[in-house]
Image (cartoon, rainbow, N blue to C red; front, side, top):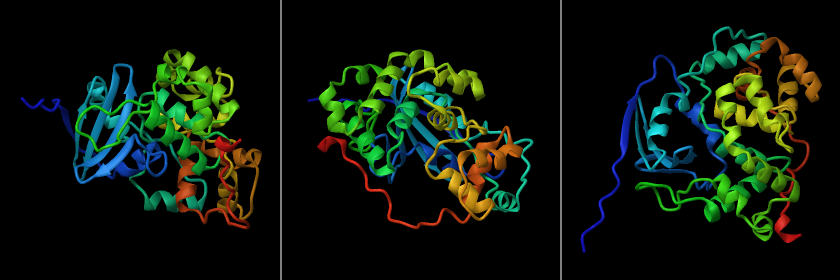
Length: 306
């Protein structure tokens, strides 16, 4: 029997100019341990994604120069978007450190970059799944949905590499299967509502900024936090502050004031950084003392047992 040849890959090489932390741009895309859309092996870092052209796989070998290979119907789009994905289009012009901690954190990390996938659906699905639950719960649901309803990633990637479910796949999931995946009713309704208008929501990455976030918030169940989490990843929005995050206001409060604060006070403290409040919050998270722990972590809930 004649062997079937491996599909040809599109390839590209990219070199940063000046300090550039590629890992900082890619890290927010990983959804916990065992993420089926993120794999690493001796050949490089593998990312599986949905694009308007179809599924695609991207393999990155990262050194002084980034060597990228891509497969599948979405390969050309992934290759074209490589520089933005790695943070090359991020512009911190005008950013001023108004706190010594922020200034020091920035000095220590001159290569910090905000990456941009240029695509909304994959990061939106993940953000909705992460609403108001522990990371452990969200990552478990993400793994289950990607493994059962995602597509095997094109190309010669590692075993188990798969794309997140497409909007069409999401709309075909039965109620009992959502329950098995551990997704409660509120998040399930939001996912379905977003999947029904997913094509129109892709325009948010073109609008960018507050206009893009406002478009996402037209979907019932998508609020400020979810829209910000998507904006940070889809178009590298430097002002998309994750207001409503369980930990962020406390991290900012302890770092800048020595005590916990609420979201309203956090907005006051970070107001001088507009329109780059998310960037300021990143420097604070990376350089601050963190949030003290006074009690055990929340135990993950398991909706599959209800």
